[in-house]
Length: 130
Image (cartoon, rainbow, N blue to C red; front, side, top):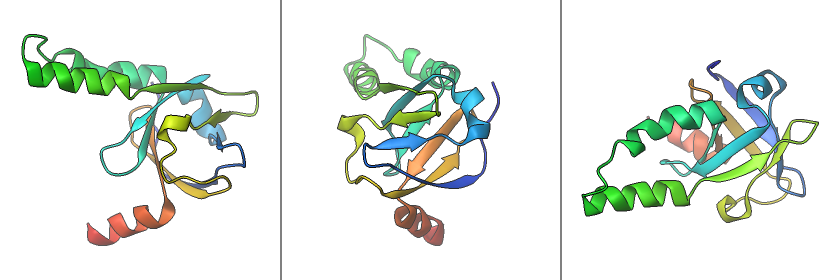
């Protein structure tokens, strides 16, 4: 599994399609998995990246009500998108939140076959606070 790194500028098209950078496409593969990220972004996993990330969630106890709810919420929020021949994926409708067609976005490699999709201003503001 090739890690994804770096920061890239991108733009959603009028159908909320995202062009995955060409050097990230082999890692992400034909099926991207989207979920709401922890910091007001979207997290986009490759299948391998998702399988690795979910190990922690799968280890949660089914006997504990809070852990069961955490597990349920985690899996309920995952949406998949198949890449087209040009390497574009449609951001799933339920995860579009404040996104708009044609919007500029910032893609941030997360190092583990995963990247984050940010509103550029929100990402810049986050960096300014760090």
